[in-house]
Image (cartoon, rainbow, N blue to C red; front, side):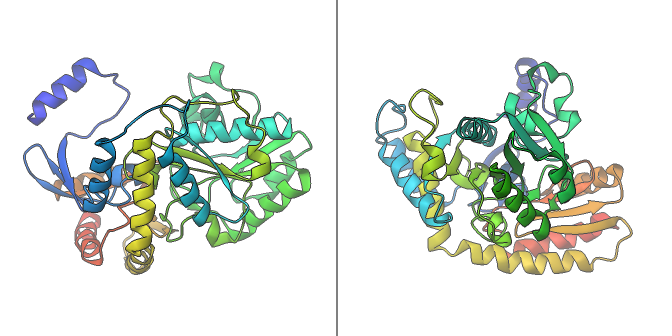
Length: 391
C-alpha cells in the first residue's frame, strides 16, 4: 500500500490522538526500517526502546514461526508451558529475592499490577511517585505519572492516593513518608522525563526509607530493563534490590508484554480472583520473551551495549556545540539535551531528511534508544549526520 493511502485511511478511521510523522514502514532488518517507497532509515528509536533485537532478527523470527505453528493463545485458565519457562528465565536474571512473576500486556498494566499488589500487601493507601516521572496512561499508572500535561482532563479518574516527590531530592521523599505509605515508585532513569539519571545517594536513600517505614520500593524498569542500560536491570548500577520490579518494552522484542516481579511473600497476597488478564502471558508473547533472553545471553549483546555506548557517550560529550546543554544516560538510553524545543525539532527533521530516525523526549532532549545490537559503524553514521544537524 502506498503512503498516501495509509495516511488517508489513518486520518479517516483512527482516533486523532497521535502526532505521526509523514512516513509508513513496511519492513525492517537489523537496525534499519524501510518505508513504503523502499527508502532505508537507520533506527535509533527501536519502537520507543522496544525492538531490543532490532528488526526481523533471524533467530527470533524462527522462534516466533515455530510458536505460531503450534500454539498462540489458550488463556490463564490453564497452565502454560511458555509462561512457566519465561518466569524461570527471569528468575535467573533478577536478584535472588525476586522469585515470582506476573505477566500482562504492557508497562502501564505492569505498574497497575504492582500498585495493586503493594496496596493489598501493606494494607495502606498512600503511594509516592516522582514529579516528571512517567509510569503509563491507564488510570492508576496515570495517577503515578507526576506530569500534569498527561493528567489534564482525566482528573476524575485519578486517585488522591498519589503524592509527588522531587526526583533526586531525598528530603522531598522523607517529608511525605509515613506509616500509611504503601509504596514509593522510582525510575532509575526518567526516560520520558528527558533522560534524567538518579544519583546513587538518592536511590539508596529511598531503599532505606522504604525499609524503615515498611513501604515497598517499586522500581519501574519498563524502559530501563532487559539490558537497555548495559546491565539486565538499571538497579544493578546502584546495587539496590527493590521489593517489586516492573518491566515491559524490550522484554519481547516487539510483542506486547509486561511483567511484575517480586518476592514469594509479597506475591502470596495475589490469590485467585485478585488480578487477571485475558491475553497477558500467552504462549506467543512468552516464547518471544524467552527467545529475547536466550539471544541476549548467547550473543553477549550486553557487551555490545557497553562497548558501543561508552564510545558514543564520549563522542557526544566531546561535541563543542552551543546548542547542546548536557549529555546524560547509561548504555543505550542516552539523552542529549538541546538549548530549546525549536532546536530539537529542527534536529529531528534534519536527521529524518537524512534517513535517520531519532526521538525527542520532554520537548528538547534527543533520546537515543536504539536496538541493543546497534553497532559501532552505525554509531559512526549517526554521529556524522548529528554533527551536520547541529551545524
